[in-house]
Amino acid sequence: MSNVIKMMGLMIVLLSMSLFSFFIDFNNYQNVNYQNINYTTSRSFDNKKNIDSLIKTERFDELVKKNEFQKIENEIKKINSIKNIEIYRNSNLELEIDIIDRDPIAVLLELNSYMDSSGVIIWTNNLVIDGLVQIIGTIDKSKIPKILKTIKAFNDDKFFHNKLESISFKDEEIYLKIRNYDLDIRTGNEYQLKNKLKMLKGFYAYQNNKIMSKEYKQIDLVYNNRLIAIKK
Image (tube, rainbow, N blue to C red):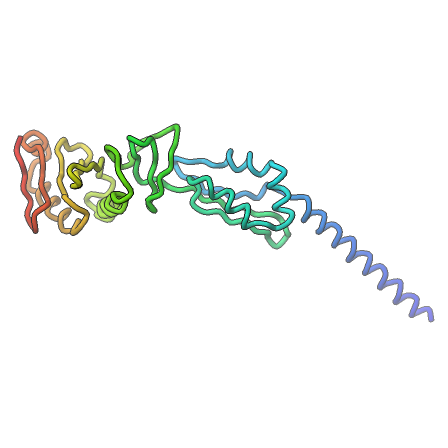
């Protein structure tokens, strides 16, 4: 009989401990900890202040407690300088928030905005060029794929990597400028850019850089496998 009583007593102790542990975990689950926010910021954006302000609202707190993470993510994605966000609970039932900012590849001077590699345009009140490709003049949506393809072609080329200074459009044709060279480069369209850059590279290797800037005002790459240098 005493063994039965001892066994029952042990079961009661174990049950009490389990309930106590559950209560602590549940309490932690309800009391949201916003310390585990992982930011991956770009050189142009830092959404930490925006997110810190947002998570302090009562509505955000209620959505977290209800595990309505998708609604929170959709709300935060309205900040278009944020590329991706993921909200979840880790193995300790603590809230984790992973945030990745967009990384601009160009600045649209007329719109006071950035453009990222997906073609998303992000307005800013503090535009910093900082070596980014400058898009001159106003553009419509149809020109965005042309801009992205042109920037990618330059960045993929070892010789011209990070040397593209600006892109502009004249009569629907693409005109470029390369850093430290005072002349226009007319590529016409965004097709066969690899071949066009190959011809341009050969011209640069043949000509003295200083003579190029002094003697030529434009280089045309609009004809099949031909480069035409127009003198001033």
